[in-house]
Length: 358
Image 1 (cartoon, helix red, strand yellow):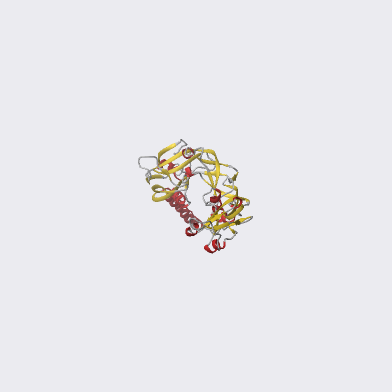
Image 2 (tube, rainbow, N blue to C red):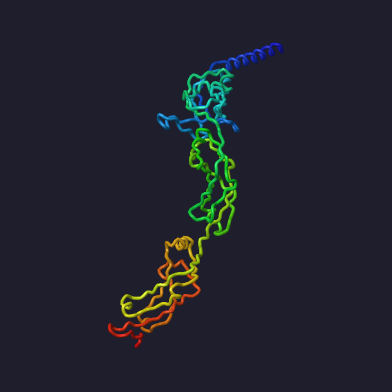
């Protein structure tokens, strides 16, 4: 009886093994989508980019952003176990295709790449006997290029505002690593940009030399939007001095003008001594932009002595000059503003001059 039971068990196990083997070896067709990313290995001297050939009709296309995933739809056929391996591959995330991958090569240039041999070379396919009945897209356009390095100066860019002297970047240059096709756009005037943002700028103390540490660097304008561009180092220090928002200028002398109503000019003679026809050592303080306009004479500075009819009648002998008609933000200081005057009333025609008040 025991022998009979053993025989039945052995037969059952054998049948199951035969069934499992047959199941594993039976052909199976499956619709599968895998994801490919065209990217070079870290440290590689070659780059590979997936290109959109339709971006510029009749001309070489534009690389898609690094890390762009290409979805490839396929109909595959093979043993169940092999198909399961392909399905695991489709669920594992993007597969990297690099320069030198089987079916790709390392030759420089832009060319059409058939995807069937590239995918078939993946271990989950060729090694397990999976055949590809359909693949879409059939081919793609890729660009393989050399990575080159250029030393490029760093330029400090600040928000609208003035600096005292030229800003410095430490280090003064950075290495730009880019595909040779992109690096060829660089010229002697190209510059890596160290940009001071508005928030940092607002915290700087005018008139004090300061260091802004570890500011991220931007690629030169010629390479904005290009793929595979690296800046080494990625950040640099900026050393700069913000021009004081207020400034002062000393004027050795400022001319003095009289301000009299036209009707009084015909009735009075006014004399100012030579020594009082200009104010000496006048200091003007205020917003830096206005002070610069004074320094460049865009804003002429003149002191005025306004004389009213009553003052002319009284024949005052001196009066302080004033600064009028200037922005209220400007402040004027002078060692002395007093201007001496000699005032006489003109006599009617044919008579001598008559002192005012008589």
